[in-house]
Image 1: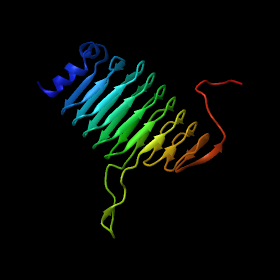
Image 2: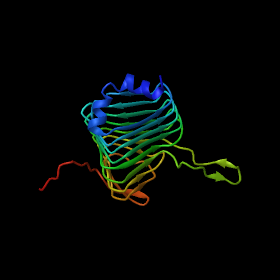
Image 3: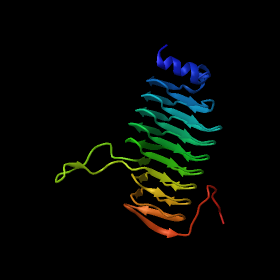
Length: 222
């Protein structure tokens, strides 16, 4: 049996119903790839896996719309938690032993989230709010070479985003950054350094503008 057929047979028992309702497109090349709990609301999504022993997991009650999930490599994992809402986004993994993890109750309006080298990770915590046109990357996808040593100097580094983080529109979070809980990232910010908890970070490159703050999704009039 062709591997793509086996994937549908064992891990997509409701595939035909979902395909009709959600227009789910898939391309699977490799062996041992799995997907758990696809019985969620998906719409206009595109799954592409080229490799083996990769796993995609969806939490209950999540809503995924116009999302492209692409994995090129082996032993990679994409985890989306419960009650998430992810729209108009791309979750992209290249190489091996990589992870993209999005915590429960997190919402994403549109983002390019890319793990681009082996053994690196992007972890986004619970109850985060990502606005539109967000970029989060662990690497540069191309090599920068030091002329004296003739060695590469821009290897990938993992990104960690804590719980209850608000990321403003058109913000970019670059490799190696650790953002702690209750942080607000201003519109258009480029984050290149770690962010302590309860601060507002904004600018290019981003700096701390205010400390001892938190935020709520609800707009409070007074």
